[in-house]
Length: 178
Ligand SMILES: [Zn+2]
Image (cartoon, rainbow, N blue to C red; front, side, top):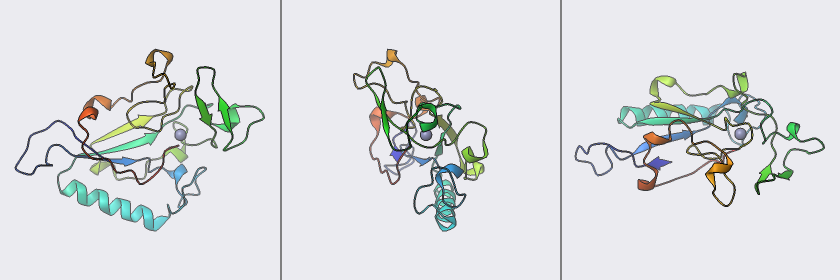
């Protein structure tokens, strides 16, 4: 994903306006580490290509942000929290949300939550899904009810202020979030 951020131009129209967001490259999402919620195609070769691309983009001078799913134990998206429910079933939450259920994944402090990027290339890490009652498919804000009433809960991620969301110029999503 590419998001406009505040910065100075050095002659290139995109310079200072573009950041790279690398989404959820964590053990639990990869087949390379037999993750609990592995995405197809996330083998060693995939991880190598991500590492090479991250390095190249950093060498170009772009700021690189990494999102991390970072759930407390007993998170609302875990099937294990809802008795009688299985993975990929959904549950209705009383405030109007529908929550799809996943295996336990990316629990804070566990090996499965480990970020598989070289942190020397990372400008900032955006942890998401930290509220036990709200899922977060976005690196910017937790899921909120359809009525978008933030007072009902959900947190903005800690890094949100760094990225100027209304000024986003391009977005390219090649993965999915869980
Ligand atoms: Zn998750």
